[in-house]
Image 1 (cartoon, rainbow, N blue to C red):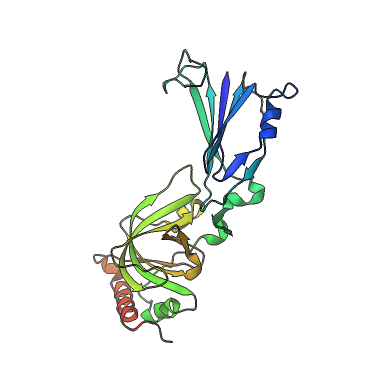
Image 2 (cartoon, rainbow, N blue to C red):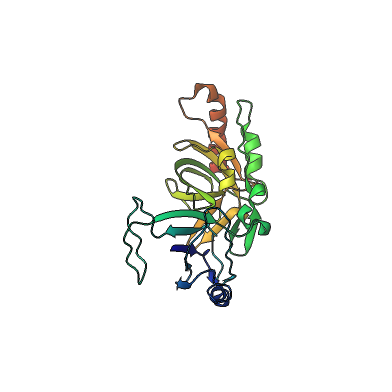
Amino acid sequence: MTIMEISLLTGFYPNQDDLKQLTSEVEMYAFQYETKTSSSDSTVVLYLEKLSHKEDTVLGFRVHKMLQAEFLQAAQVTIYDYYEPCEQGPLRVEGHTPPLAARRCSSFYNLPAERSDLRKICHKDVCRCAEELCPTPKKGSNQLKQEELQAVACESGMDFVYKARLETVEASASSPYIYYHMQLQVVIKSGTDSVTPLTMKKFVSHATCHNSLDLQEQETYLIMGQISDLWKVQSEYTYVLGKETFLMHWPADGDMGKKELRGQLEGFSEYLSTHGCKS
């Protein structure tokens, strides 16, 4: 006997008529099904007599959206080969006592690619294409002048300017997003989010941006962001690293090759913190 456990995407629930049809005498793809539903999550369990390892088996049922998730993450499908032994321990199924441990295989899925949701990052009713989201870190040079940085920091729509150190990176194979946990070293320009130095803030990018960003833990960065990239989740703001985000590595004190650049960054930070933007 093979058991297929399908976790649905957050905010979706299964079409019961489709599940009944899968177990009907006409279709009989599965001989039994059950659903487990909470306030925001649902799981469908299908019981099959067998599953071929040589031919594709296609099972389908419709799902319906019951609420809008803040960040839509991939969900898991797990298949249990009920009678095959392995080292993962026995599988407990209601009404059955397995004589042996169960082999299992898991995979993750998201909304169909033709919907382009796999390449989007969404918050409430706003979604953006991930390919357009990836910021391009600026390559600092000793020729950079603090006046150039001031011009960027004071552009219309530029909400905040931080000197921040990346503490940890949170990534998971089950999530299409990468979370960067940063400690704010200096609040050079305060914006919508009322923060103070040493505050920990969460920055997020789509997983497709991870390699191009190449942000390193314990390194410090200059980050300037648009007001549109501040997304309020419950009572906290999450910062989206978007296409318009200004991102530059802030050299460490011991990096003598970047001494002039560090001086320009520190001069820019001190001036803007003191004088602000000219109206």
